[in-house]
Length: 153
Length: 457
Image (cartoon, rainbow over all chains, first blue to last red; front, side):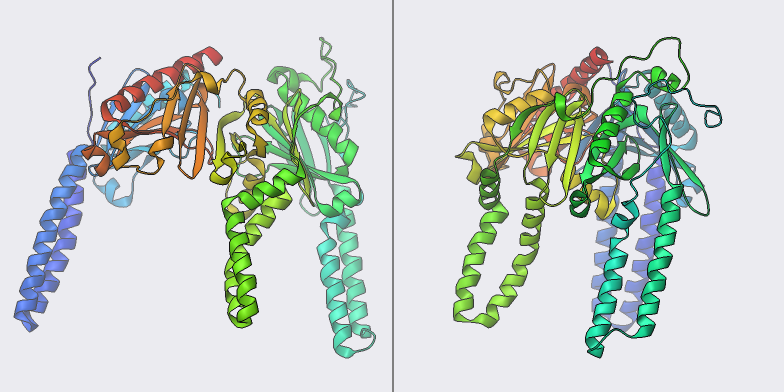
């Protein structure tokens, strides 16, 4: 069976990049201020900040690309992680409830996170950065599938 | 309103179909702390004055005593309960009347708890555990001991009947409701009674027990040499000692018996507790073999049961007391008990699959005991070098499957498959399998669990 992996929206990547750059900019400004008083120290700080910024962006991109979810006939697959790779298989029949969560920043970018809950606390399956419409579609579909396949404890 | 209608007693022998109050001594048992504080206060005052207690204090004490006596009497009068339409209804509250309904169809378990003082008076407390609620849903404190047993049997019996029947039961139904089987401790068959000697030995031979014994000896020695230094070390030992003591008082005198409603556990030194592990509610089982016990062939068996959830210290205490199926037992004894909660499980027939040799780099110590076996009914996994742990998960209780691969595992082409179940004690996982096999296993487990569920549902 061909498996179609869906990914979070690229807007999530854009949002996280933007957050990273705002933080980076603040640090760069700090380094520039230091340069005014101590030139060598300031330049070293500036180089460090820039290096950290680049590294963070690379990690961000790789982590973003690692996210994925696939709706199979009987269960939902969610994969994530670069250093520690995780793949969760959550049967529809085991889902107790589905949450759609959106923080203020996410909401202003039109994004939402879908979170699945089973009776096991360890299940922890979530799909971040979905466009609001897709998040709602996924939630409704999961809720529907969960209902038709529901099993007691 | 069934409350207004004259209730036709369709089950005249059933305890709880009529409004009932708790035992009149209940307020005294609940409020004994107030009395204690009052007494301590008076005594302390007397000591300070060195004579009789002052008149003002005596008056104060009398007022407090009288006030609390009246208050507790009124609240006792106002608290009543009965079974109504498949629910346990509990009315209480002095100024604002409250009425709570506990749906018996969702009842997970009923514990009979007897704190020390209640035991002396022959009273017991009933605690009802309902699925999906944060903490113990309702308590009936206190009833006389035989009455508590009766009510427990009756409620459990109602809970195990089909829902529709339970809901209809207060109204005169065209079908005569099935006769209520005799409840009480007559129909039990004791499976295992843990001898006190073995229990004490098992505590001493446990890791913390051995630690306490060795360091206790060292402290005694140090005390002979330099008494001052010994005090500090002794203080460091206190928490471990407290844990041991708690374990001792909770798990003392453990008896496991088979009853129609499930496995019945009795234990406790000062506060005794009687629990029922209902059939089919066991989510997973864990068998623990500490290093020092293995030579003696002793095992500890723990379970995860639906219900008993919630947070906070009280809930933690509850969980500590509720998850143990056998504190210590011979392997043959434990097999009978495990058979009772997981019927059909044959641990010997399952051939465990070992992880590849290269997994030694990742788990040099525990590699020896790593193993996982799967069939249509069960998943059995084990780990641990010093303390060997075997987890058993019935396929139809599997909640979700997770495949996790850390950086070292990726280098070695290994991966771990976690089996998520409801509960906190058991954590089954096929640790450090070959990465490709682990991926296949993840899929296979999802299918196995689904087939098992559809067979049961």
